[in-house]
Structures are given as C-alpha cells and as structure tokens.
Image 1: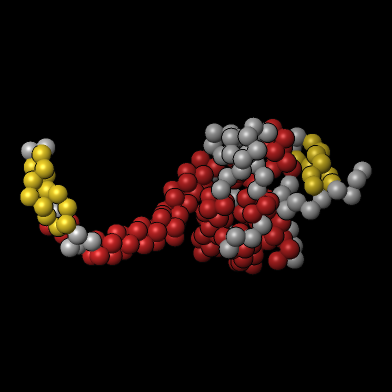
Image 2: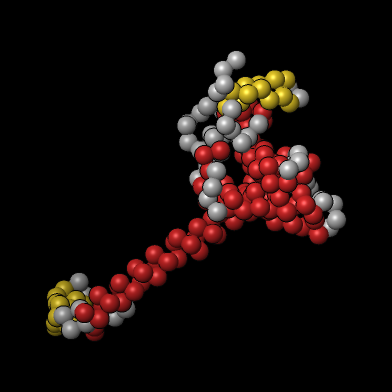
Amino acid sequence: MSDDFRIEQDSMGELKVPADALYAAQTQRAVENFPVSGLTLPPAFIRAVALIKQCAAEVNAELGVLEPAIAEAIGRAAGEIVAGHHLEQFPVDVFQTGSGTSTNMNANEVIATLASRLAGRPVSANDHVNMGQSSNDTIPTAIHLSAAIECHERLLPVLHTLAGTIETKARTLDDAVKTGRTHLMDAMPITLGQEPA
C-alpha cells in the first residue's frame, strides 16, 4: 500500500483515505459516491456548520451530557474552521444527499480528528461532535446562518459604501441643469437637485 493512503473502517468495511486527510471513511465514501460537479460547498457555509458544532458542544457541556474537556477540544477545533483554517478538508460535492448528511459527517470527522489531537485522547465524530444533532437540523441551520453572516460581513458593508457614493455624486450634481419632462414632452429646465425623488 502507498504511503499516500491510510485504511479507515466503518460499518460498510475498509476504505482507503488520503494519508493527510483530517476526515475519515464516511467523507471518503461521499467523495466516491457523489463525483457530480467538482464543486464543493462555499467556505461561509462550512464555517457556519463549524460554528453550530462549536455551540452544540458548549451547550452539551452545560447540560452535563458532554465531558467539559472534550467539549473544550471540540470548541477549539471547530473554532479553527470558523477562523477559516482546514477548508481544504471539505471535499464533498455540493450535489450530494438531500439532507446534507455527507457534509455534516465531513464536519464531524474533521472536528473529531482535530479535537482528538487537542485533547490527547479519542473524540468521536458521532458520539461527541454530532451529539444531539441531525443533518436535517444542522444543514438548514447552516444555510440560514451562513446567509445571515455573509449579508452582515459582506453585503451590507458594500451597500453602505454604494449608498455613500451615490449621496456624494448627488451632492456634486445637485446644481446640474437638465431638461425637465412633463406629459412625455420636454419642459422647463430644472436642476438635478430639483428632480423629485
């Protein structure tokens, strides 16, 4: 066997996974099962999934169902993804199962690997990272969350810039004279500042 791969095992058997991958068998199966477009989910969406995992670990620890040390490791691992690291570890095609289970498990596996390293002990993708969650909850939440974050961080700032630019241009053209219009015909000249809004 090549040093480029390692063997992972799940309920369906053994599978070759790239040696340097932070993900495991379920992600690799998804990569092999859904080679549809070559497009992966956008970074904002992946970051939103990681933010959900981070919050879930914190809440599960507060509820006393997840050991605090494991919750902290999951939170720190998910935080690395929220910060934009490890995004290359999410290779699943955007066209996949309808519920997004492949992406949910991809996130669980990557976070579990990182958390295991941070905690110095095994952290389970299913039992710890995915605790109390369903793909049918996580993925729709991530869609809404990523859209809200992108609107706040990217869309609204450029809209404010555009509004400011238009206001500045309006002030500089306030005294510019133009032909007025009335009843679909030319009328008395007016300035742009006199033009009704």
